[in-house]
Amino acid sequence: MQALDATQALQVRRVSSSADLLHPGEYVFIEKRPPQITIEKKPLANPGFFRRMFHRDYELKQIVELVWPDYDVAILNCPECNTPLATTARRKIISVEPLTLELPLTGLYCKTKSFAIENGRLIRVVYHASLPADSVLPS
Image (spheres, helix red, strand yellow):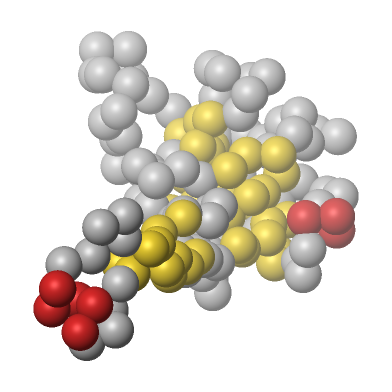
């Protein structure tokens, strides 16, 4: 497998499930799931006169349980080491087709290299030594 040069771009391709992530540049989109809401009826220990009169001797309690993921996630393969990279709540997805991310991603095993994804193209980002790591030079 060849390393991705700073002047090259790799076309990203969407696959249907994370089990199909085999080649560099493939990605899967996992949509945000709504929270699971359950309503629990809890009997009151000592209901008052009016509550007994109107047959309301219980209280309703709404339980909201967050289900993973609570934000949109794109998981893609690193072009350098072919390990999975995932977006976080901080790295937002601007568009899914073609894939565009707000901030570059960095691989788990190649921490010195970051990759920006714009208009379905994966581009290696080169940082300038005098700039902080969060800022990106325009290419």
